[in-house]
Image (tube, rainbow, N blue to C red; front, top):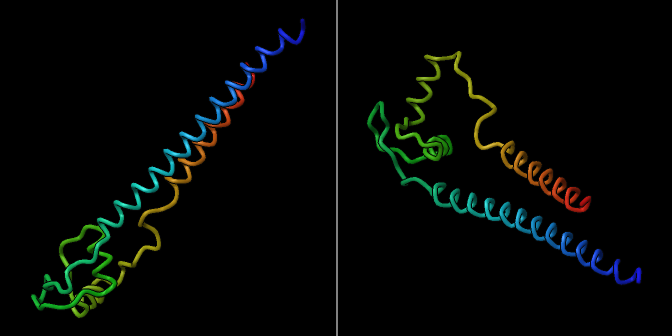
Length: 129
């Protein structure tokens, strides 16, 4: 008689466990999907600029270098040749390049930690009931 009573409870626990695994798989799938979409967007928008540009100060046609390519990738539309850029830096010695900026890892880290917290909470909540 006790075997008949325990059998439905074991099945119910198995269903809850399967739901938790399904939820975790869905959350991991969403995370992977976000990463893939972000990578595709970066590939689309990180294309190389045209081979040359016209200096905004002296109007010469000059090839892009690493500095101007990075400026182009960050959305700038006004470029200066190396000589004009050097003159500007000499006139503004207090301006220094920042070591920060760019896309950091804080958002993906926060997303991963929140997904882990949600998954852990869900597993413990459904296993308790």
